Image (cartoon, rainbow, N blue to C red; front, side, top):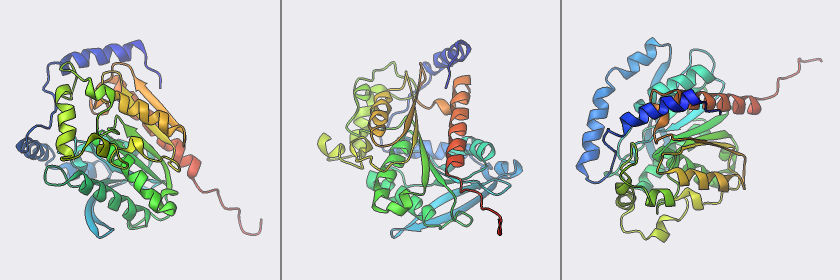
Length: 326
């Protein structure tokens, strides 16, 4: 992905605005509840907007491993070429599938796929293990053919921020079901958290960070993993960076120069490449959350991901059958 001067200047102007905005932090139990309530208010009428744009919307329950996990399914107007399993971000404490509607609708239109979003439980009501279990259940249900019309279609896992952490942990846990893991055509991971004890860039994050509150990040990870030592936090799959990545699908990973989680992705890409193909997109001066912001660089990053997903679907498409009698 090429970054030109105009794109960079546009991002710098937006970063100047971000520098005056509040930073996200997980310090108190009541703040996630307030944040989630406000998020829901902004999403009133979300299903209707998608349907008017020609995208089908369903709410289903994924059943696997003794769990029942809500999922939200977006379908294209025509026959889907594949499926994207989406795991949303939100710092493990806020978020839902609807928060990615604009991104997922763009994937549906650009790539001709269905998008299945896992509505996993959130902290502080749920533990990090419960969130990981929900995402695994959603993935197993999908890969085992639980979704109508999904049989035989290639699957690509997409995760952003905390969702990238949960996506990577899910891929590692799927190694217990090799046939299901083999169905995956790839994964797209946006600026994830892969070391829950804190990567160097996270530990050194200061007050000048954008979007995320630098000094609150390490305490936030400790709130998420209460009573654990750093050694325990670095166990796999809790910290995917330290997992056995053998057998992983091809990956596309994004990070940015002004993201305090940058080292997580740089280290993860280096380790992934020892086991499977991995393309790293390290965007200069890009903040955390870039793909949600109205910048030329954010739009270019999404377009690059669409092209990558399209290429993976083409690479895994079944060969055309020869006519009978040929």
